[in-house]
Length: 359
Ligand code: SF4
Image 1 (cartoon, helix red, strand yellow):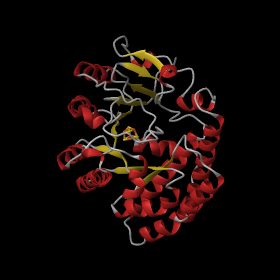
Image 2 (cartoon, helix red, strand yellow):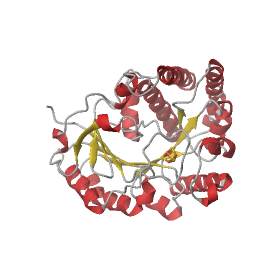
Image 3 (cartoon, rainbow, N blue to C red):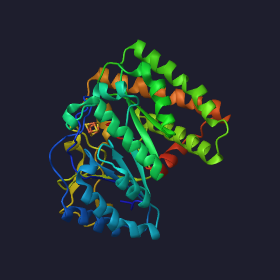
């Protein structure tokens, strides 16, 4: 077995989340990764060959186990002096204040924030178990965290889950997020709700509406901002191709996910597929490079129709093909050239956005 030339390693600090989004597919168990397991993850990473590492801080909601987040970041930060290491966090932001945002900035994190846009869309399917379930308070908390992240200079992408119910608001939600200072919008068509032809038509129209929005935005922007936009669109093309099942996620990387209970998965698990993706256990592992590969990746499992009904798969393919095509058209119109084939993979690796379908 050849040794990995890059790791994409996700640590699930807890399966628990303080929210209960209707469309969420992650297992929400009250299991939190303890300090000794965090230290074991760090030790295994330090023992890897001198290759790049993309380290994703995941959940559930990772900020619910904040002390362990800090512990792992502290343990791994010195490695950045020796090789390319990126820190990435996927969070709903409701437990991020200005101090934590400043810390994420100091540590060089990129953040993917779960925010669907304006209040009405955001709270249609996202529900908090805190703040008395008050939808307005939930949205206010997420928007406040976005402001903290932008103010602290943390590169932040919005994970916008789009549903058949909210797709007619996609453009308005995108404009809302761009006005908050975001450039990278990860449009995630929800999996499991029925996408009828009329919804796809609306998705298509709304995506086409992004062209004048971004054209206006680009006018007078600095080269660096425009480059951020270019790379974010390439990254979205790449992600959409992955979600159609046409190729592997991060084909050049060894993808591993470590759960709070110590199980090691060979791809991003969710509640239906996690058993099939187990490749080892933290307590028994002495070398990450020697772990077996899973028999099938998460999306291969999905497309083998073992875990999803045929109509769900049809919708996933149709929405992501549409997304891929529209993003390519957008790229060509904005930058005057075709999106380079295969470049997106490298871009998304750099931007460390894991392609988990949850939000
Ligand atoms: S989608 Fe994200 S924020 Fe919502 S319940 Fe699931 S893990 Fe929590």
